[in-house]
Image (spheres, rainbow, N blue to C red):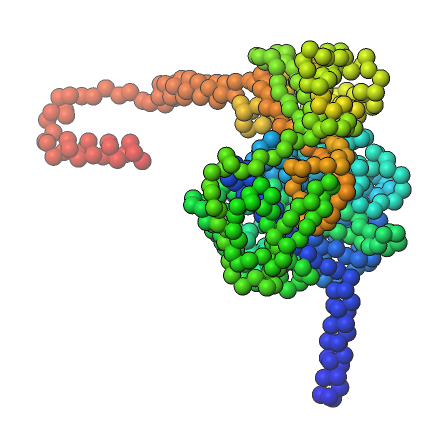
Length: 571
């Protein structure tokens, strides 16, 4: 009997091990860290964690629903994309401002606050219902405010966002939803659940460097989650799922010419994550040639990124026995090689004063030597009444202010345009363009708006701060970009460049929220005084005092009577 039980237990354990090994062969995990010194003496640290699941794809609606064992793949993610018919998803939570004119383009461009867009499967019967469910799921998964999003902050872009992975069916914008929350705060409540999606969490591997006290004492911080169906071969005969969790941080370097990885993050890397197939640390010395690394890099890797060849010093985490130390020969950052001008840039600001009429100016500049085809998306809340008849578009050729042309007067400057009016408390304003911008030229858009009035209960708690207008989105395909941050995961010949403008902070007329408090206090005081006097007048009984009889009583008797009156009054 005992022998039979042991044989049965052994068979069960063997089956579990075989199943886990089969699951493991279909799943892969890679992690990397890119360190790059910036021209002003700060350092960029960009983490990439890529989890792939072969032969299991969101394009197959039943694939994830039939899975019972997930291995290293995050189960909350698989259940979410299966339940809400998600084909692709991108999410970012960002705090701080990326200075693209000084630092170049970031590894992943994200606006301040929260940004989310998702493509849904063609089989989805109700995209709006799936979108609402996805927002609630992400809100619980990452402790964010996505559950507060409604139709007034949801957009359906037509030109700015296209699927980036393997996809099926026609690319219909009706399956796309986009939203942004410029005032979303980002803190450790978001970092902790995000890091729990990693196979090794914050215990070992590169995730052990996620020390919140250091990460949030920085100039810039951004976490992102990307889910796409990925091709397993060149013919895309087999499709899997790739989940990428990225973190970008910009540190201010410690004082002195020498710093280390542990001084930057406040922690040491104990060992490599045992579940990762590769774990590398890359160091980009493109802008700082006169630095020394200790220990010596394990090897040098050349990355062909667009038309540039970038040399990276690489450390393999499995063979790293000591902390990485960086020594600067010269800390005079004025001698550091500056970034070349950005091929594409966007500037946005407000005009006007007071709480009445205002204007929005957007300047899109092509600083490249070649013409660029650019998609532009602008979204404005419904309570800013956009006056479309005031919209003007001017093309400045060769950045010469004396050579301005109305965009409508040229044949090929505006390739596409669409305006969507707002509906009070239902839909926002949306404006989309596709521009063809000549080299070293810029396009200026100007539109006026009227500030609307809100109901008193529609104002946020910090209404005096103002209201945000979302960042405008600019998208273009570029084939050379000297100031782009090199991707550590793949070589590219073309690059989908997406950049965001700064969000606009606009003040609205707000009511005097202290008035109800003042009225309540005043009325309560008047009622208390009037009621107290009336109550005393109607309830007290006034009796005459015989002074002669009181004087005949002894002193002790009078004291006792006074005490009795005192205690009886208290009772």
